[in-house]
Amino acid sequence: MLSETPRTRHRRIKENGRTDPADLHAVLAAGQVAHLGVVVDGHPMVVPTVYGHDHERIFLHGSVASRSLAGRGEVCVTVTVFDGLVLARSVFEHGVNYRSAMIYGVPRAVTDPGDLLYGLRLLTEHAAPGQWDYARRPSKKELAATRLLALPLAEASVKISDGFPDDGDGPDAALGLWAGRLPAVAAWGTPEPDPRLAAGIEPPPHIAGRAGAALHPRRPPPG
Amino acid sequence: MLSETPRTRHRRIKENGRTDPADLHAVLAAGQVAHLGVVVDGHPMVVPTVYGHDHERIFLHGSVASRSLAGRGEVCVTVTVFDGLVLARSVFEHGVNYRSAMIYGVPRAVTDPGDLLYGLRLLTEHAAPGQWDYARRPSKKELAATRLLALPLAEASVKISDGFPDDGDGPDAALGLWAGRLPAVAAWGTPEPDPRLAAGIEPPPHIAGRAGAALHPRRPPPG
Image (cartoon, rainbow over all chains, first blue to last red):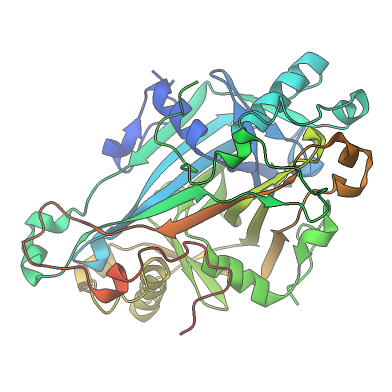
């Protein structure tokens, strides 16, 4: 069970709240971009950033501007996947289907070189599985210039909505209007070579083979 | 020009920063979900929510839990579209292409019934153009139960990244590795009827005709 604290207790739509860590890991595996919330001079600031994760921590790339990061105290990291629209008979019952995770905590700057490599590998492999073993790995100098934050997954809240409209058995059902879901379908496209790429270099299988694959898989791909 | 304040000044990657309001409007038109950042008891909280907008204001649906909203002072609303990966020769030069807008300000609860209807229409039409004229509009009772926030677009920051890797003319180009972009392709899928829908009710053209259309168009569709 994910820990329940006053702010991770699901207040509004209780049926959407999940407390199984597997749901948290699945949402993190499915997302591509996290939104990092920090307090700067008393005001909120929300910055999009890439991430990677294991079962204990989420790693955020520090290039989201140093002022957003170290020494700012607690943060909130939210990962959301938009799955489509819920189109009801009445405007009032419209909604969206989504998968979302909110993680609260005090991030730690990753400084240990081994942990830095570990976190960078998670970030790289989250975005493009296979790329860590394909691309040139960071030099010592590059590693020293890399800022990474690690945030424990201990305090988190997960919400998943995947339903149909609620007004199918109310008076509005008699209106004769269509109702249902309009899904969002996100996939990886065809790789586009760098215009400066030398002739004859083809995309490796782990990139070329990804075209058409789901961008936000329901469950992590096997392996 | 969008106003420049200390926090909307583009600090890190200056070439990605935009100050043309048309870019702000285009990012807002292209996104589906906003991330609302608020400060609660001194701590940041980032909540995903749907939105609508005109050229002056962004409207957020208040169902994102009342504690996130009124009386919380300043907020930051961030809308991000993930456009794909930038795959370089070196891990260090990897990145993402994205369109992002950050809006700062003090939101106002919308209470005037006319403004409430106006904002709800923007939210509905942003998600599903044509749906406001098709679905049953809110009753007085529903309108009274609807919470909407309006935030001026006056203080905003826009970043758009749409490039190729930077290491095409450095020493890593000699590694013989493939480099380029892996685009994200997001489209609307085929409408899925509510299982409780009566037989013979087909999706209206504004829904049925959307299948295959881009979820995050580069420019707002005409009309």
